[in-house]
Each structure stands twice: as structure tokens, then as C-alpha cells.
Amino acid sequence: MVAQRIDGKAFAAGLRAKIASQVAALKDEHGITPGLAVVLVGDDPASQVYVASKGRQTVEAGMNSYEHRLPADAGQAELLALIGRLNADPAVHGILVQLPLPAHIDENEIINAIAVKKDVDGFSVANAGRLATGQRGAMVPCTPLGCLMLLRDHLGDLSGKNAVVIGRSNIVGKPMGALLLGDSATVTVAHSRTKDLPEVVRGADIVVAAVGRPEMIKGDWIKPGATVIDVGINRTEKGLVGDVDYASAAEVAGAITPVPGGVGPMTIACLLANTLTACCRSNGLPDPEGLTP
Ligand code: NAD
Image 1 (cartoon, protein in one colour):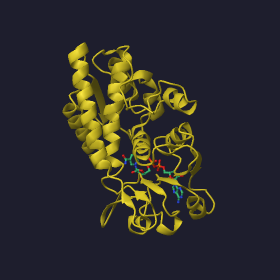
Image 2 (cartoon, helix red, strand yellow):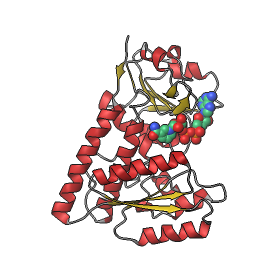
Image 3 (cartoon, helix red, strand yellow):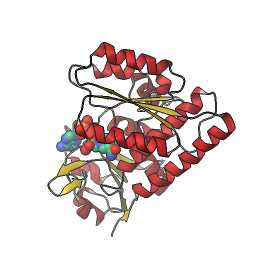
């Protein structure tokens, strides 16, 4: 079997176009322009690239982008004061604090200071709790939301499917598990202490790999015909690779996302989706169509 390649780049482009047309309609019909504020502390090169790319795509979707750059030695109080101003600013519908923050900053306190409705990364305790308890109105973390969209697009109904998520981080693994449960999949969240991981993965109709170890998941771990979503982004001597050994997995899987060009482009597209959703909610409008779980 040669797996179908799930083209996240094309899907994300379609999603961005859909968001741009919904943004244009929001402006026309209600005179509202969604606004996203991105906060960057310090000068980590990778974070700078991410922030620039988020700003560019926000503007391309017709939204306002506000960038706030603070020096690496900015203090907790200064950052909290900025979050407070952004929380109170009616032109700002979404707030994203680029992680990781410098070690002297209490990351959790900062994330939880963001107004729940403006927490477009969905990392706050309030939004994680809403997602975990299946309450409406959660802002859902962008990367797992993007994975869910790709899975639904490829498989349709996920109900009753065996899903194995590898990785239990708060930004990918845990919310991914909650989203799959919400779609009535039978979910296993595996992690670094899981015993006989290859055997666990062999039972999966859906594999979501979010480990951060280059090409760890091999083709002979994959059930024939399974759908494989590779979240991993690992910089190696041979370039960017995922957590899945693409060449061997593609011989067995039914479908698989490549790295790059799979999950990666979905993450920023879902950030734009969350910003539009947050804007609609803050203006008492219904959720935009097709952008929330
Ligand atoms: P993380 O380091 O916070 O979590 C990794 C998880 O993998 C942990 O829960 C750990 O228990 C598990 N793990 C580690 N070694 C393992 C092993 N040998 N067997 C089984 N499980 C193991 O990472 P994260 O933030 O969740 O990110 C995971 C990967 O996804 C990274 O490569 C990251 O760069 C990538 N990522 C991509 C996007 C995107 O937009 N595509 C977004 C976020 C993260």
C-alpha cells in the first residue's frame, strides 16, 4: 500500500481563504475588524520567525495585527500590565503570548492572566477545563484543532475509531486526546513511560505523533490502512523531519501527513480561525461556520 499524502498546506490555504471571506463579510455587515495581538519577549530567532509569519498571515486574512516586543529582561509585572491593557482594548479580540518565555517569567501566571475569551492559544486553565469537560465556548489550542480538521476531512466520522496520541503535552497531546474523545473515538494517550509503544500504536486506526523525536515511529508500528498525523517538527542534518519515519510509514498507512507541508501550516490557519471566533463571540455574534470543533 502506498499511503495517500494528506496535503495540509493546501487545506490550510483553503481555510485561510474561507476565513478571509468571513472577515470581509464581518466588516461589510457589522463594521468590525478582528484584531490579534502577539506578544514576544526576548529575541529567540525561531520565535521571531513564528511571530513575523503570524503577523503576515493575520494581515493577509484582512485582520488587524498588533505586535508587542519586550526585551528579554522584561519583568513579570511589566508583562502582566501589558496583558491587562490588551484585555481591556476593544480592538483586540485575540491575545497570543509567544512561548517559551524567558526562565525568570512565570509562564502559567501570564497565560492565565489573558482574558478567557481572548485566549486564542487556548492554553489557559479555564479554556483547557472547558475543552476537557466538553463545554461550549472553549478556545481550542491551534495545533490539535488543525489535526482534528485534517482527520475529519480525510475520515469523516471518527466515532468508534481507535486513536493513539503519542505525547501528553498541554499544547498538543492532552487537548488532542480531548478533541478525539469529543468526536467519540476510543483514545489512548501514550507517552515516554508507555510500555511497548510499538504494540500500542499497532492497534490504532488513527495515530497522532507529537513527541519531538525525529522519525521515531516506524512503518512496522503502523496498522495497515491507518491514518497518520505527524505533528513533529525536528531540525536535523537532512532538514526538517517529523516524528514519523515517513518513508516506511507511507508503505503501510492509508494516509499520512508530510513534514513539512502537513500539520505545520494548519497551526497558524487555526490561530486565525480562533481570532475570528473570539471576535464574533465578543460581539455577540454566532460562531463562524466550520472553524470550531
Ligand atoms: P513536548 O516536549 O512538550 O512533549 C513531548 C511528549 O512526548 C511528552 O509528553 C513525552 O512524554 C512524550 N515523549 C517523549 N519521548 C517519548 C518516547 N520515547 N516515547 C513516547 N513518548 C515520548 O512537545 P510538544 O510541544 O507537544 O511538541 C511535540 C512535537 O510537535 C515537537 O516536535 C514540536 O516541535 C512539534 N510541534 C509542532 C507544532 C506544529 O505547528 N506543527 C506545534 C507544536 C509542536
